[in-house]
Amino acid sequence: MRRLWKPSVVIATTILVMAMAAAGSVQASSPNTVTAVNQFSVDINKSLNVQFRFAPGTLHIEHGATLTFREGTPPFPEALEPHTLSIVDRADLPRTLRQIFFCPVCQPILAAHDPGNDQQPPFNFVVNKGPAGLNQPGDSLLVDADHPVIRARVTASAGTTLRFICAIHPWMQGRLIVE
Image (tube, rainbow, N blue to C red):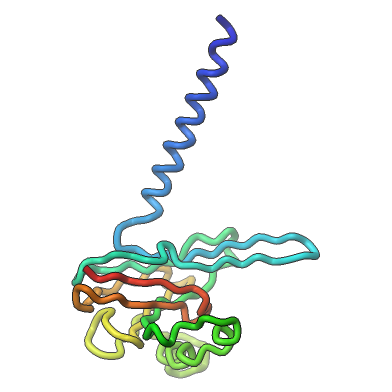
């Protein structure tokens, strides 16, 4: 009879861990939220792996809904990175390593966030190229350590797909599908 409790504990623990993981994933992906994820790993004398990405990479969102763009929790405080969620034309998405390092659409976006170009606040954390809201290329949101959460309404028409990148890290790319 004493041996029967071990399998029960293993099964119960497995169920508990799976439930906690599922609950964490539900909490992590709040509706209408895009998170800039910062992950790092190192293999000494071999490589440094930096994984900056948007989570989720594709978000279905209702026309008129408010999008929350937030900075993810880094593995350590010094790893906090500023990010943009910048709407671009599909044709302007960087696809090659050269395009990523010499991103022609990124510089104007970054200049719009830092109109003084002196790297000192005040920065523009929300840039609207046209009408208010996220609806066209050039619209952009910026998060940093002092402003880790920015919100904006999605004003693009239903049926529109808005492509976005981080103008600081152009390999970070995603889509807003407006419904």
